[in-house]
Length: 427
Image (cartoon, rainbow, N blue to C red; front, side, top):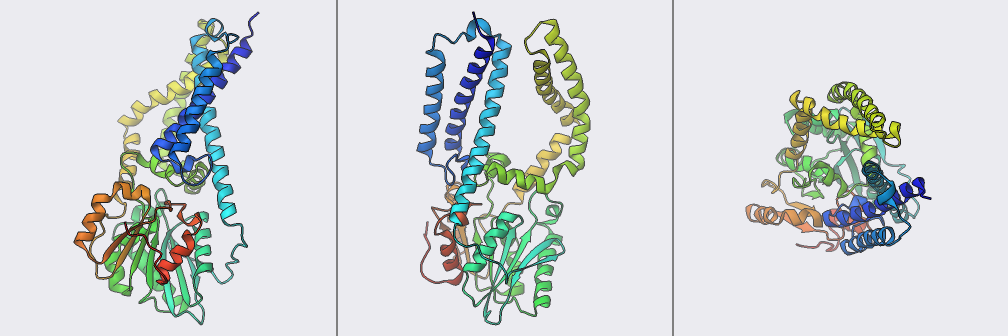
């Protein structure tokens, strides 16, 4: 007597294990550190070994057992359903484990007493949020252009707590891709917003930012490089530091870039903060897709009854949902809804930091991660030839987005800012 439910479960487990292994091989191949199951940097050989082991085990277990009766007892359609559900479960488990392991790694890295941040005040200004700290002993000033978000703010507070006491601290958390203010960054008005915010801080605190060291973190480094000439003219900084600027990989696209240094939890947190459902384009896409989805689900469910397919309601719902996504693409493309999103992504890519950096009057140091340097060898060489004041450096143990969480990187960054010791690696 054959057991249908047993066959379904075993087919699902096989698809799940094989998909989990293939995902790990792909993570190692593409260098998606955000999907590392053990947190931190992806170790390619480890991922290849894990993925190969899971794939071999899944095939050996499933096809070597004579009790598996999938061929005789399950229709081809149900095998496809098991495959789709197995892939979805593998993706979900990978996202959960990667986010949990990286969160645990960050917690361990910050296992010491967290900085109170009592002397670091948050001030809301038009278009930006500022973190400020000035004391009577502040003889030098560090001005940081950084990204928005709780994670970045936590890093800034750690950096402030590690700096020598004679340093004043100013940080502007700038809007990034997807936020309403982002569309004004990179043009004349966006530059004026940043400069106006710095002037307001100077008036508010009664301090002069002229002669301070300017540093950009992540996307903030892009903005600093774009405003380099104006910042040098207005504030005469002794040097500028661009730490891990965002350098999109056009071969991977936006999703691949995000997974280079962000976990699925980080990405979801950012998307929820951006509230994409309030975008008019998203509303138009939803209104276009809903009636198509209802019609496709109804027709697919009717087909399951006509051809007497198992799990009629579930199969009809799943097939109709997938079919509606495929059909909706064509009218959305003709109406420019899909093209508009591609145009938005192209704009984000085009607003990346100008690399190589344009020549300036002040020394500039650009800190790159291994992922960046692999794509920018020629550009780095061109930058060094065009501007002798520009120094390109590689921090081999750092990752964009996670670089300050790695052990020893934060003190190294403080040494870079204060100029104490030789903590740099010339590439």
